[in-house]
Image (cartoon, rainbow over all chains, first blue to last red; front, side, top):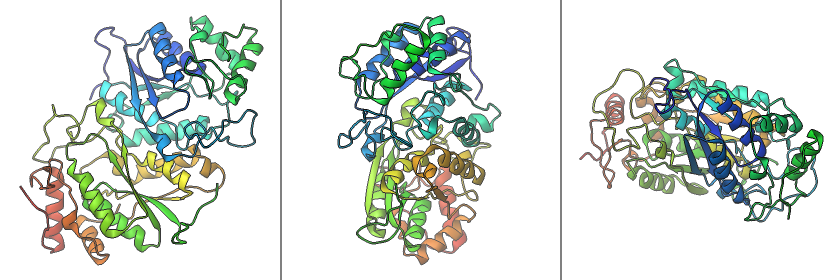
Length: 230
Length: 230
């Protein structure tokens, strides 16, 4: 298997994980700006806020990708998270430790590798952030490093001399810095949905942890918040 | 989250990956013999040989599990493997390097963690083997070690002091040793399906790499091969 330049564009290919939120939209803009032909991957994991999938479609259409793929992953069928289990309420104030919105073993970079291998892409972008984040363990740099090491032992491409690189361009940025970076690259954050309890039209509750981090980020950035609230 | 003993049995819980083949059936028998309440997880990943899923059901029914769960994972939708892509033929002779039956980033231990977290299980069993195997990179001990390290950075259970243990009881055994071990624990290998090209009734082609390893294993073990061949 060889690393493939995209035939249509002659640019190297990258798989970019796109959730529909602010961070991954910025990560996609950064990957495009770095010269990659981008293949955007979203997951339908039984999340409550399906409007984030609509947001992912809008964002990829606006920024431009070679392909958008929505992969069904019913990880919610195992239960255990407020994001997938209606029996668990989405909390309205920050919690100590890892919050109930954590989805067990949710981090789905793993499946991005499958597509990257088939595409001949060595590069995977993920918009994780370890500054203004909810305390999910799978957003920390040490997790990403361990993941990259594991990936390069797991996959044919890596064994055959084409190791994967997991890019986390936002990992050390504040939410305000992310917003400044994305705006400079033309991201329209009005298209993104961050709320854990957004309605079908993508309107945000304004009270959950994700809304709080986003709203505080726009305030700290000195930028008008384009979020549509309920 | 606390490690849970199974309420029905008072035994510690383990998630066991069960494919329907010889190795994972043996891993399940070993986990049960070690005293675990076993939760068996199989994947419907669009594989050609769906009869292996039937085999997984028969094996778990015979050996006894607390629950059997079949998780849909359409990793084959990315293409790139003879096991999921009808455009790629299943080879009939051993190949140099990693064979075309390798499924990109296939190793699905990852999703077992999601269930283990919800169950409060610290233990995951997987029947990978690095002796009589097809050369898949995700069956090697160094991969499993890197995976365990990554898992213990990724998950809430681990962060909260309940690290996962990935058990690979077969990793250093020959196929003949696996067969001896399983027979001693009551595994009926006539229920298992290993063939990459088995028909709907689970009858094996006798020619693919997996058939060859299995047949040679029974011969080396001095045990009558119970496989039904086409």
